[in-house]
Amino acid sequence: MSAPRVVVVDDHELFRDGVRARIGGDVQIVAEAGTVEEAVEAIRAEQPDVVLLDVHMPDGGGLAVLEAITADLPDVRFLALSVSDAPEDVIDLVHAGAHGYVTKTIEPGELAGAVRRVAEGEAVFSPSLAGFVLGTPARLTPREREVLRLIARGYLYKEVALELGISPRTVEHHVSAVLGKLRLTNRHQLSRWAAERKLVD
Image (cartoon, rainbow, N blue to C red; front, side, top):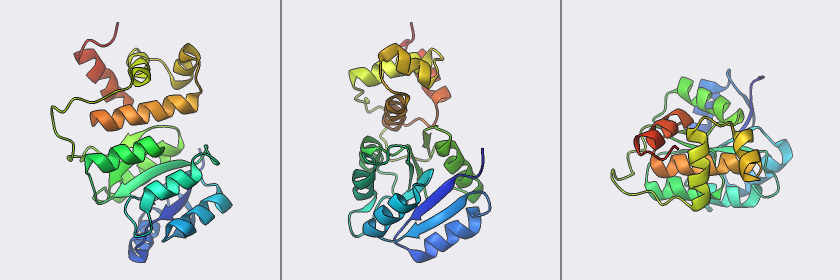
C-alpha cells in the first residue's frame, strides 16, 4: 500500500509542525487545520485516507469534525490523537465514528504505524488508555455482542458482514466501539478476551 494521505487537525501549530517533521516521511500529509471549520474544509477538499484528529479544540473539537464529515464521506477514516485518556472521550469519539484513539505520548514510529493500520481498515487504540476503571462492566449492544462472537471465532470483517447482513464498514464501526469499551487494542486481544469469558461457541 502506498503511503496514506493524511490531514492533521490540531489547534496548536507547533504540534502540527512536530507531527509533520516526525512522520511526514512515512505518510503523505496533504493538509493541516487548526479549527473545526478549517478541518471540515480541508477534509472535503482532500478526501484523505486518514484524519489525525485532535479531540479537544476551542470550537467544538474532534466530535464536531466527525459529525460534519462521517455521513457525507464514509470512506475517510479518523484516528483521534489526544492528551486525554478519559473513558468518556474515547467512547464519545468512537461512537461518533473514529476508528482509533491514541494519546500524544505515543512514539513517532508507533504513530506512523497506527496511521497506516487505520488506513488499512484496522481499529487502533493506545494501550495506555488508563482512564478506564478496571472491573467496570462494558455495556455492549446486542449487535456488538454478535460481531464480537464472530470476530473471536476468526471471521474476517467481510465474512461477519455476510453473516449478519450488514456492510463491512458497519462491522468496522462495531469492532472499533467494542475495542474502545473493553480497553483492548486489536482483534487478537478481543478474541482472547472473548475466549477467557467463554463467549465463543
